[in-house]
Length: 214
Image (cartoon, rainbow, N blue to C red; front, top):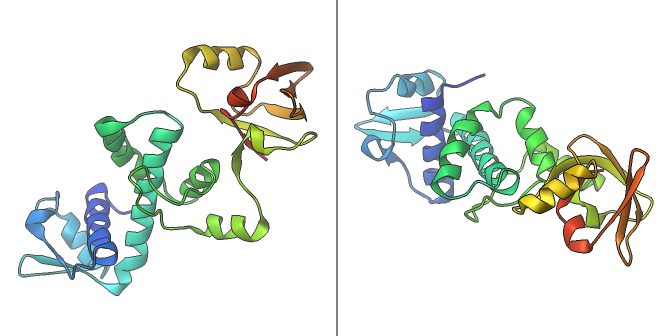
């Protein structure tokens, strides 16, 4: 099932208000979507919401979908900040655009890449998905900094998390690129790793900015 973007916005606002803030409903005037928007009928036809006297109520049938919608938005916020280093109003706007693309298995892949984060950048909880439960039961940490690996372990590079362009260029020149296989050979006194047939040594601070999928 794929809801329209406006329907997702309504469901997201309603779920936060009812499930997290304890409100019984929202007035249509307080929702960013216009009261006469077809998205209300869309959600009503699915029995996700009920609209009465200018008030919007979240039905039990809509709680799960609302939870998934909030999860996608907060994962998108974490992605903007943690991976793309986009912050502030720009991050929020881009997260709103990106969340509508996180459907089916895409949100699980993003969640795994981010190492199953518990909160969004604003400190609000990210509703866990099936991937989070599976990771906890299996002990799979998903994506972790290179510093979390032990000597002799290897993995695929997921992304580089740094705001320093000089560091970024240095790592890229070593072949530290998403998708490349990295083998950690030594952790002390410096981190020595192999990519392809080449070996490199870096300090702990730089190693911490390389994120690897084990």
